[in-house]
Length: 380
Picture 1 (cartoon, rainbow, N blue to C red):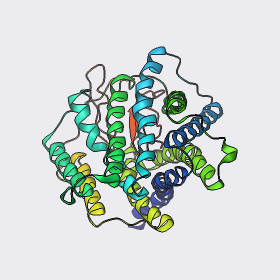
Picture 2 (cartoon, helix red, strand yellow; picture 1 turned 120 degrees about the vertical axis):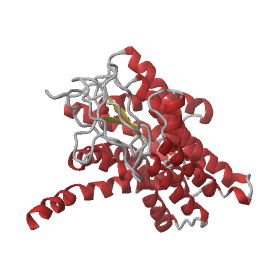
Picture 3 (spheres, rainbow, N blue to C red; picture 1 turned 90 degrees about the vertical axis):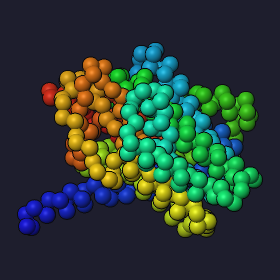
């Protein structure tokens, strides 16, 4: 018995600390946004955050001797992905946190998968809707109504702030299936696509921020807490989180690593309460639990499981995957073949960021002789 349990415990000790650290990093992002908007316009905060993240990933690219995409069609699609996956939602969270608690913003971030699946099914045709998924979506949107507390009436700055955070999650719901549909066939690594996406978002924010909010203040004129928050959001939440999540995927498997999404709102609530002294109404955490329950049902983590598809995709093709726990959905392969979704310990497909805890699967940089994709990571 000992011979069978010891390796499992050793494996758990190997990936669990990184798993919890990643949840804490992504969960603390909402605290750093709250601190940053005390002195920065939401557009300026997002600009500094994304520029710092882009610089971090460019350094990692150089160290790993990877390169940015060169195909014009990829950059053209990244204009859309960068806007809906980075620039708009990050800014909306900043505007939202001017009106609501950071912990509530963390809860709204968890609703991302509720937007991903309907858009993937109805608009981008990268996923099929099942009865189980429909039940999960229904539960999830019931949870949204509970979080909003619609029986108390609507209106006011607090309600507006919640809608802004809700809109940020909806933007991720556009970006994820869009990237699945149009960029998943790229042969570039997740790191390369992530860096390119952040570079495009930086350019977008620089132009829009100048027109809407004027010139950003010099970093030397900001307080240390705000500067630290910007560095944490960019370098820590994007650079270090990328490395940690890559390690988690390789040690625990893609499916297990993706469940970090369920811990992000918990850390957001705990950090908001302990650091900022924030408090929630009873219905907000209750609604969050209903949302997460709906997401779990829609993604097949609860209830009867369907038999795994066993036909093997041709080498180099992209496997068709269901929506993952982090809100990602895989693009269907060009040759029509399908493969079973990865279980814990399987070699995962590549993922690239579209926001806090949300990811999108992309075609890997290379495959081995058996056609198994090289692992990449989800980053914040």
